[in-house]
Image (cartoon, rainbow, N blue to C red; front, side):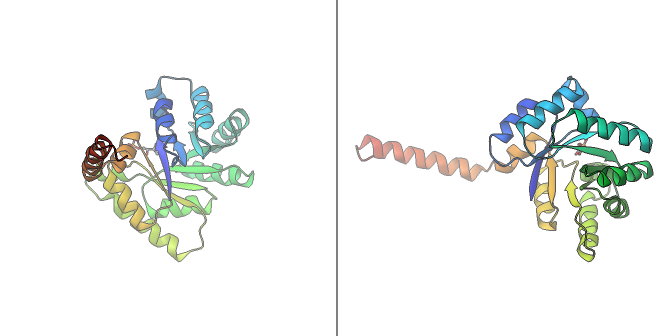
Length: 219
Ligand code: E4P
């Protein structure tokens, strides 16, 4: 399973990349706004830190505009940048054209299994169902991941399911159990996933005992 960071904060990306398990990064216009930096400049820097796929989102609403923005981003930015496209009818058409040109895409803002399947048929490299935003409406976002994985099991689909809008470590664990190919999450969740009080307690005990071994001259 791939673990992506969902941020445009290069300090966080450097921190998690140093763990050796970062497979990619997703950005969106809101995350770029939060970074306070120039879009292309920050995506270029991210692509230099993490060699995996880095999603850069188009903002045009029409197919021709999305294709033009996607091609311009691919021309200007490092090879590992992929094009994030909204899950609309215009976005499907743009995904199909970019796929035919050999450009990888991430179809985002997916809220139903039907949308996910249509994006896959258009040739999306990734589809991004948003779990947390469904939870926010009072429904269970994880059901969407389950539905999509069930559909994927019935057909020969190469598109990867990229679970997005992840809000807590349990979301990640459930995605792993359901067989989602990828999860994108904030740095805070990477840290939470690695933290366990028994690891800390066990380490504290080992270090204390090792100090006693050293004090006895037996190290
Ligand atoms: C995914 O690619 C999106 O950037 C992201 O997961 C959205 O998450 P949010 O609902 O926390 O904004």
